[in-house]
Image (tube, rainbow, N blue to C red; front, side, top):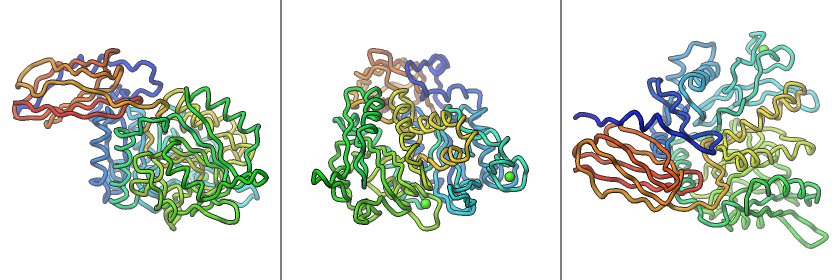
Length: 487
Ligand SMILES: [Ca+2]
Ligand SMILES: [Ca+2]
């Protein structure tokens, strides 16, 4: 069977107005053997499990290359797996047009787990040496071990070989262990990108504090920052205020998430690996997460609560992992510290995640990278800022947009069927500037942007008895797919 061909002009003439981190940058890698906008690294046993996720992302204009740690280990020369992974990632970001890195597996201490983290050396506030899983190492141009002693990220000895993300590439870890975890997370991503609530959910943010009243100064500061980037939206505060008889405990927290009204959550307060801590030692743990009922209304969360994002422990899951892994409930992505987290003076750091993600409309992964790029100067100067840059992680899909507007579901018109041969396929929608992808059964693939009327023309050669699949998507839309038989 002859495979279908596309006119080159379609794929080469694309523009991406107003998108700071364009979905289409993989086209820069056209000369590469296999352009991969997204590189997903996982364990050999989970490669097949990730394929439906990759197929979904491809429809949305983000082709995914899946590589297993075994393949990377075989193809790259370096002294250990983590260094091979770093070199593989740099090869993809420097030469193959890759814009997002997904670490598609959990990590455990001492270089174990599905996708092991690189542990780097730090000192705690009391001066004790401590190792921290450092996923930004994987974006680094350098190897974090100047003195070549196998101890990475030493403050003095390795200083010359430590660097920070520049904001161009987004990275996230989806800390799954089993096929069921991958399936559950894939289902949540598809819901987030195609069935996102068409309500105030997108533009409502809740800022919750589990044990302390929030000061007016902090509220004013967040109001100023968030109101600039969440147009027409609302920021609401939740905290206990005993003087006014107001409580905010696990019950209120569950109600908050279950209400399906706040698509963005920030949580402040004490925490542990296993849960968020409230007054009177009450906890939100994995057990409470399993009782949530927020099906298909999955928020993006940031939290400054210590250890809630400690993905690398043998004991599993941490509370942030429960939030993203639990099927049909919880969150779609969580930015959380893997260790102590920000001091009270640094508490506002995560407001920048929202400012970048909503203000510059970049993906979750790029928003965290930009935040860290902004920290670089301080991190180079002070160990505590360096530690913070290493311990804040995005757990979840880094390619996701933060959804700063109420999305709509496009109405898409296309021919019911097509005759084989050369033709101009016209797709009409009510979705201006949407991302339109086209695929057939034989590997044909093109992505383009709809014009301001929502229309696209694909000049192509279609093959008899095949099926053309069209998907219309975008940051302001719920993705719609239709299929056109060729007869
Ligand atoms: Ca060293
Ligand atoms: Ca874990």
